[in-house]
Amino acid sequence: MGFKAPVDDILFTLRHVAGLTEVMRDGLFDGLDDDLARALLEQAGAFAEGVLAPLNRPGDRMGVRFADGAVRTPPGFPEAYRRWAEAGWNAVAAPEDWGGAGLPVMLNTAVMEMHTSACMAFGLGPVLTQGAVDALLAHGDAALRERWLPRLVSGAWTATMNLTEPQAGSDLALLRTRAVPAGDGTYRITGQKIFITCGEHDLTDNIVHLVLARLPDAPAGTRGISLFLVPKRLPGDGSANGGPGDGAPGAMNDVRCAGVEHKLGLHASPTCTMVFGDGEGAVGWLVGEENRGLACMFTMMNRARLATGLQGVSIGERACQQALAYARERRQGRVGSDPEARPIIEHPDVRRTLLTMRALTAAARAVAYVTAEAIDRAERGGDAAARERADLLTPVTKAFCSEAGIEVASLGIQVHGGMGFVEETGAAQHLRDVRVTSIYEGTNGIQAIDLVTRKLPRGGGAAVRRLLADWRGIVEAARRTDAAALGASAPRLGEALDALGAATDWLLAEGRAPDDALAGASPFLRLFGLAAGGVLLLKGALAALALQGDGDRNPALRATVATARFYAENLATAAPGLARTVTGGAASLRLGPDVFA
Image (cartoon, rainbow, N blue to C red; front, top):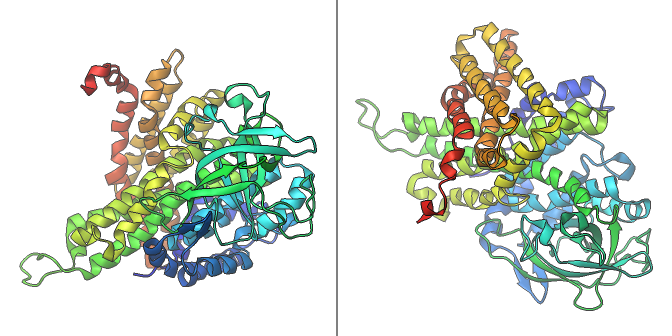
């Protein structure tokens, strides 16, 4: 089936859950209003439906082709990319000073959601280009920004993130790629990187690689990593300082693609092995300070982690649409005394599955957009509390939303029954494509460790306690409304927040054994996301009830309330059990190696 961009659902979440209305009211983005936001998202949705969605299935079947160091994307991808860049979609949230539209990250997140739903293999590459723009804005010197930013912002060139090596996955302390000063302000880079998304392709005539490497006298471990900009093609004027050239890429750099991976999914997105320095070394320029490369790269990675969680939302939405359409058409079984086979959507268990898919997707969307709002307030408004909130929510967004997408895609196959297990329906592709989201950009286990060991303890847990107070206010507002349509939403979500609060207190207690905290990290992150998603859906339900009270008869409002209630009464009920796992599950992990005998 085709893809229908959920513009109305997205706008409702942005306005009534994530706070776009307040961002506009506070004047953080001059000239932004409801009409502009809707127009932008409707245009993005039309591009997703008309240009990108038709590429999804053919791209999956054909995949990329690699020969003699060159990568060819499937037919239609280069033309679609040209149209995408010319339409300005790469520049939505980039600063106006560099050719961007200067719009909120929130709106760019919504655009990315629809484009990724339409074709995740296409939407994956721009994530890294936009992340490179962020890194250069934050850490690049004036010459680097002037030379590289205009074409990266416009999408004329793309960018990559080069971290992983054969011996160094999540443990970047093991990196071996070397950078040697050349004496003219440049460096010579030698080494190999693996799993590089869009490391080579035929979409643009230049690719800008951001590469982590070690200087000859660098300290050991992660304290000795620097970040370098290493282009596929050198500046057109051959300048040695990376400054302004003639606008066209020049000679080939000493960089090549040695091969592409054959993957479970995302067949139309090239995942490359990159070799730097077959000859005298690839020419590169230092980004930021020496031995501070990891901090620079995290500017890029944190935005990519939001985008990865968003990919879970995107594929969840696509899987929901397809499963719902199939359930309405597929006839199987009887209902009551009716002798005719009925559409499977009329069977309670199928409805439960479909509601689970819808609720998880809506909750994940809310979490992702709230994180984007915190980024906007931190970056545009200089709000320190918003910065803390964005830091806290980023690992939750990456892990909770990606896992929601995986679960929804798997349930979508279940709704299709046997037809979901064959490639004909396309349901299997959603699961194959989204499965990697819990792995790349830092595995979800790494996100959980980051949450409990770094983000949670900052300020004695002040950021999470502020969030809990805000969320309890939403639950109390629901209790005061006493609306029958909400059912037991308020008490169930109150229990979920109590569970999150208890688990938080346990993790922050003085003297807590580090291994005990790590043992509870993943269930704690799941608990955090589960509670957050439920409360944010409840916030949306309260807004929907208020609109209904003002006379709005849009049937989508009733669906919003019903989805929030289903989540609270059927999914959020897992929260107390997760809290018990966090606080009492560590002992079962201290049984020694014999447990695996």
